[in-house]
Image 1 (cartoon, rainbow, N blue to C red):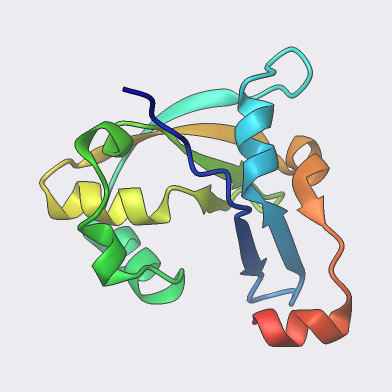
Image 2: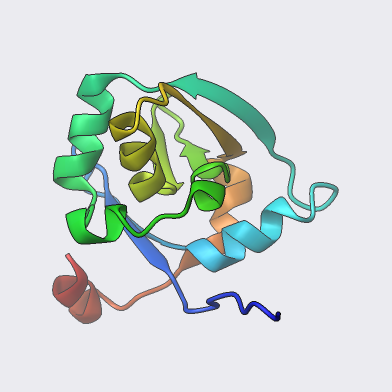
Length: 136
């Protein structure tokens, strides 16, 4: 049996509350960067999932409740990707749905690949302001 992977393009948009900076991350590029640690340095972080954090993700990061129930057990085990920002906060760029689903099914931690902003900038998209209005 042959399985195919969905290679659809995924973009995650993040707007910093304090600065108003908008970044559009090409998630597929970050996923490929994980496979090239010599070129794109990253770490692994096992983090606890707190209710407050999961509720924020559920309510603010475009989590689709219908999609949550389609995530396979194998997919739930895959690490997410987060980017560390200069102010010591972070953005979960890949894995928001998995994080919520893991928490909802009793898993209170999740593994993430972590990139610094400097390294992750290789996956930023330059989207014109008129298009950004449509995306936000």
